[in-house]
Image (tube, rainbow, N blue to C red):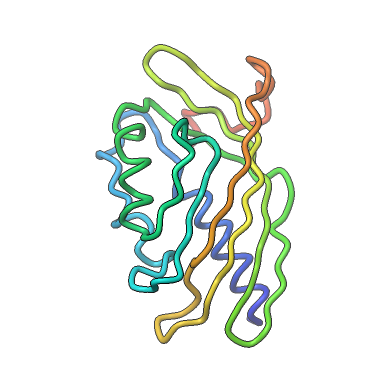
Length: 155
């Protein structure tokens, strides 16, 4: 497998790491994403405009602390790739983009979204790791994803 294929596989698996089914064990960012993020680089910058506070995390642990509280309250999150991943790789850096759709179900509301995610990967002794992340999300009209995601009982 060449570097572009490795990164494409990593980016797709990263996206499905955010998948949640009703009754799952509590969300643990580090356990789920340890193999994806560079946990020690001072160059890490991670941003997602779906965060109401629009914070930029400078560590993977800091990024996890943004998302864990919401994922602990979540009933489910189901994703599907809409476009990509598209990858360029050269020596020790690579970039990938992927657009996904997701249905986020909280106890009181269900939200359909489309997110374009751009990741920058650095080759480390442990493999390719994310050092930059930028996600841009659009909330879709309610029910927009009906029939586009697998039914929860098939997951």
